[in-house]
Structures are given as C-alpha cells and as structure tokens.
Image (tube, rainbow, N blue to C red; front, top):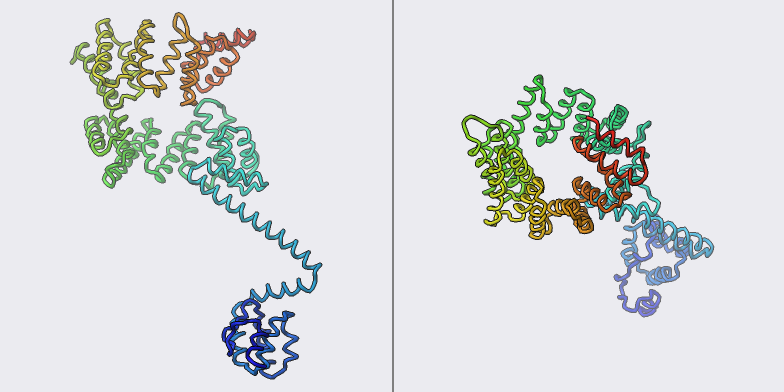
Length: 561
C-alpha cells in the first residue's frame, strides 16, 4: 500500500506520510478500551481489535491503514489524546446505540427534548427569581414586579421569601386585597408560618394603630402574636415594633429597653429612645441616651463634615438642652459647606423655636418690642426656607394673638413688604391670603391666593387653599375648585388636607355620593380635634342621601363635648 492509498483510507487528502496530524478527539473511546486496543495492536491481533472498535467505518479504516503500514508508534501517538476526555466517549457510545435502534432513537430524542426544555425553563425561572430578588433588595419595585410576575404567571410560586416580596409589591401597586390574602397564608393568626411575614403583619398592625384606624385589646393581642412568631428576628425594625407594642400595652420600661436595643444596633435612634423617657423615674436614662446621641453625631460630623443628617441630630440635642446659640452655629457651619434643604429647614425651624420663646409676655419687653422681634424672626425663617409650611401657621397665630388692630396691620404690612422686596413672593402672597380669609376679607384673600398659584403652579398648598376659598366664597366657583384640588391630589394623593378639601368641594357641588366616600375615608385618620366638624359634614351628606338615622347619629356625635 502506497502513501497515497493510506491517505485515501484515512480520508484526509492533506495528511502527512508519517500520520502525525491524525486526530481522534472527535470520536474518543473509554480509557480501559483504548488500553485493550493498544495491547491487541501490539500483538498483531487485528481481528480482536476490530471487535472492540465501535461500528464507525471511517475510524476502523484509519486503524487498519496504520496497522498495515506497521506504524504502531504513530498509532499510539494518535490515539493517546483521546484518553483525556472520557465524557466525550460516553456521548459517542450513546450515538452508536441510537444508530443501531431507530425506535430507541425516537424515544430518547423525545426525552432529551423534554429534558432540555424543562432544564431551559428551570434556568429561566432561576434567572427571573435571582433578578427579581436583586431588584426588590435594591428597592426597584417596578423591575422586581416585572420578573416576579413572570414567575407567578408560569405557576412558580417560589419560596416563602419570594411570596412575601410579591405580597409587598402587590400592596405597593394598590392591590391590597391580594396582598393581604397572600400575607394571611404566609403568616396565619393560629399557626407558626413564615417569620418575616409575621413581622410584616406586625408592621401593618402598628401603622394602623398609629393612624387610629384600629384599636382595642384584640388588636394588641394580634400584634403580640405576630411579633412572637418572628421572635428570632432581632433586627432594628423588630425591636422598634416591640417598643411600640409595650408602649401601647402600658409597659413603658419594657418599651424603653427595646428601643435602647434598637439604638445599639442603629445609633441614629438614640434620640427616639430618649423621647420615651418622659417620666421622673427614667430621667437618668434620658440623659444617658441624649449623651450617646450627642457623642455619635459629633463623631460622625468630625469624620464627615457634610453629614447633614448627623448635624441635624446634634442640633436637636442642643435645642433639647436649650443651647440655641450653639445650635445656630452648628447649622451655619453646615450651610457654609453645603446648601442642604434639610439644614435650611432646620435653620428656619430654629427661628420659629426662638419665636415661641417670645410668645410669653415678660416685664422686660413691651408688647410692641416683642411683636417686632416676632415679626423679625418669622421674616428670618422665611428667608432661610420660604417653603417651610410651619411659617404660615406662625403668621396666622401671631395675627390671632395680636391685641390691637395696629399690631395686625403691622403683620400684614410686613408680608406686603416681603412681596415688594421680592422675598419669597409666592409664599408671602399665600400667607397673606390665608390671614385675610380669617378676617373675612374674601376678595383680597382670593386675589393673593390666585397670585401665589400663578407665580408657582407647583405650589400645591396654594392650590388647595384657593380651591377651598373658591368653593366657600359668596358666589362659589365649585367647578374650578374641583379642578384645582384634583390637580393637587394628583401630586400628593396621601395628603389628608387635600382629601378634606375635595370632600368640601364635592359637597358644594351637590355630589353627595362622591363627597360621602371621600369624607368617610378622611374621618378615621383625622385628628380627634377635627372630627366634630367632619361629623357635621357627614351628617349633611347622609341627610341629602336619605339616610336619616346615620345623619342623626353623626349630629349627636358632633354635639358631644
């Protein structure tokens, strides 16, 4: 056999004469089989070797060609690399079996397709779950909802933590009923359930208790149950919830102890722990907690002078100790470094704290001097943070406390001066409009509120007050009032004042069904002091809707002391 015939047998037109370019890696065999083949090859037992080689004609022809040329060393060099990949041999044997049996081929092929399909689906679900958890942890609920919705849609409920994440996203999207249903399954009222879900339920109950939406010993018992089921959770949040529970249950010492644990985990909470110490017996704890808050805030500011949050904490400590001058200096230093909205608000509030100290008459100053000092402090508060909503209340309170027409005139003139000087013009118009409404100067009030909103269309408080005035003036413009208040609610849907104004506007329009729904929604979360007026307005709504009994009950509640 000549070299040409050898190349033909090997099926490689460009093979070299000595066969060094042979490569059997595409058809490898098991290591022990190769060993037996080499042994029979070296003994010239070609027939036995043929029985050992799989039914691959091309492979056997290459073996036979090399054998006929008596080149065992080339054969060994060519086949030894195949020993490095036994897994490939296994695949090779499976293919050989499939080639021998078409029916088995079909069955195994179908099984392989199903297996790979399930494996691919499983891999996709794992990817969705990982991406959903990562997005949820990062606080990107929209992205998390995208991935979790595909898991739920495929029937993959996931782990209890995944289900809890999904319940949280349902609640955030407004589907509270579905969220509660899932949460009830994870954290039942009579079984152990999933600890973090119990903690979430405890958080919901605490929020409802704080808002006055629920009350009574049964609610406290439920809160205690869920907190106990999450007992292994010693997080900051868990300890704060326990502190709230003990406080509501009339056990202040335990509440202080729990809040102190939370503060040890998060030193930013030392002032909250101090706020719980409002009895003579806990005065020592209060002083200790305030001291720790001061030490923590001073160290944080030393490490990072731009740390506005800790600078504010230090200011709160100093105000608590009546060290107002040092608090002023701390804020001034911070504002020199960074014009932070938080620091501006704190500086404005500090001016109002000084204002409150001047509210009590003293023999050292005359009424006129005290009034001028108060006007000056409110002016400073407005300059530091024109959008501070507390300023309006102080202007109104100062106007109410004024004991003469002359003093009230001075207050209004100061606001007019702010407008002339271009200082917080929209805010000055807004404040002046509110004051003028209280003294029954409706036209002037409407003028200034209109100007406030025109100057700053994003000033939603001005839109709210303007809507109220439009609905309650001598010739109401309820349609425009509704347009304005709905615009404000669209920007701040959870603002209770805006919802209250919407209820008033709808009542003025005679839309009693809609007004009733809004007022019923506002009533449970309104401060107790404002509920008398709400009772009267609800009585009017029920009366117009023909519900005389409910109207009567609301009127009776409005008349109670």
